Length: 419
Ligand SMILES: Cc1ncc(COP(=O)(O)O)c(C=O)c1O
Image (cartoon, rainbow, N blue to C red; front, side, top):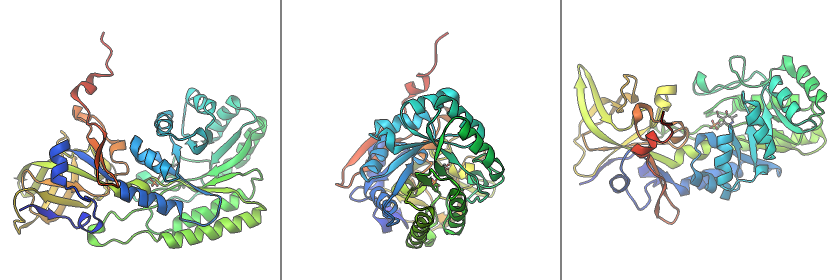
């Protein structure tokens, strides 16, 4: 009898007409599994967030740069942002036009900046020095500046990107300097952006950050675009019934702010949001296999192939992911245990789940890690010379497609020069 502890996918129908055991048998584990239906739903929710007409969503591709995911986002009418020339390369391959890519630069080299400008991609800079660099490379050009109005928020200090304790953005003391630098090179400050942090589940800080930004924007007469960043949160505690971010309320508040701004500014500007996680986190379950179970002194462990090279969020941010247990042969043992789910990396901190009460996990079980689509594969690595997983997509017409193959052992040797 197959056994499933599936509090999340049991409700959202994630597996459609396939099942985790079949996918693991065909593609092996670890395996990133995406559901196209859920991905498209999230894209549409973002696109339809406000009724203000000149509104666009830049999917923040850093969350997941799989080519197929990017193509679907493009089909759904999303634009993209890019943090590097590498992301731009993948986005171009996914069919994005230069005019739909926004480069959000941070400490980039002159060479990288020059290449991006050469492609005709709109650039956002986040310091006066990088504005100077832009001015030298593209005098008279249009540019966006990333401001830091002092508001930051996020699920972990590591993802707070606004406020006093972050490397990002230009603070108010430097606005005059920024304007002087722009004048020196005849630059047009046509865009202002900010991103205050990630994973907000209530909108207060985000709206306060937006309000402050819009106040500042009034002082810039040439604006064509204002980008409010991403950070929209998703419920990572679904199994415990965590509610969703109130998109209707957020959309309503933003709509009003956009319209009020346009009225006060004297014309409409384009408004953008830049969600990454909201678009891709929930359309993905990461599947891993339990290879070992043991007790070390008083601690119970389930040892899996889900090392932090595959999903680093729990180790990097202390993040929570709901997990499910699937057993192809056998039933629920009826036992509940406090267990840590750990990976196969030679590091004592290699924890996916720390001391959580779960139904008993047996060797051979599959572990499904919920909401793994954002900052999952895109932050994976070959640490310990482990192979990065394959990625498959359950399409809207029920097929399963391999959308990235698993690394091969020879990939580990591919970059070396012989000496
Ligand atoms: C500038 C910028 N925009 C957008 C995002 C996307 O954030 P999220 O995935 O939380 O929506 C990030 C993430 O760190 C970011 O740094």
